[in-house]
Amino acid sequence: MGHRDAIAEVYAGSFRRLIVHLYAVTGDLGEAQEVVQEAFVRALIAPERFGELENPESWLRRVAVNLAHTRYRRRRTLDRLLRRVGPPPEVPDFSPEHVALMTAMRRLPPGQRQAIALHYLVDLPIEEVARTLDVSVGTVKSRLSRGRTALAALLAGPAELAPAGSK
Image 1 (spheres, rainbow, N blue to C red):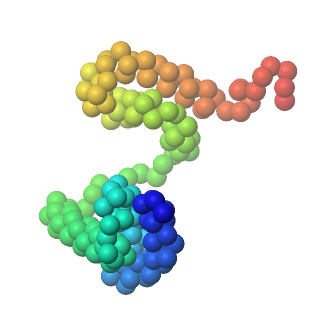
Image 2: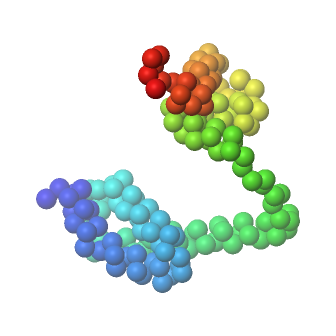
């Protein structure tokens, strides 16, 4: 049996027990699921080493508990910081146009989506977008152009996208 098969077998046999345990530790089912999934991701990163463990479920449990504690400490630190700086500014309700834009943005390829978000939504100059994405200025300009064209088509609505002569 290969190492990945062994991980799949451990997953099938222990995932539920790990979730139950981490749910008790964190008090949050979503948090429990996330840390257990992250523990399995770490096993998949080094399947050979995982395959040599005497008790893989115990290792997964320890990794998941450590992740939960780390996340708790980070959240507690962030909460203290936020109490010092005050409440976050209120975010206005999203308009239907904003929701439509975000829906259309999700349909763009990641490179175009990142370039458009950084340039038009975060207001970074093209040169800064290029540095952030580690691509050339020309690549950013190309992604912006293609992204704008794609967004225009996506936001035009189905009636304007239908071929001529169709209903």
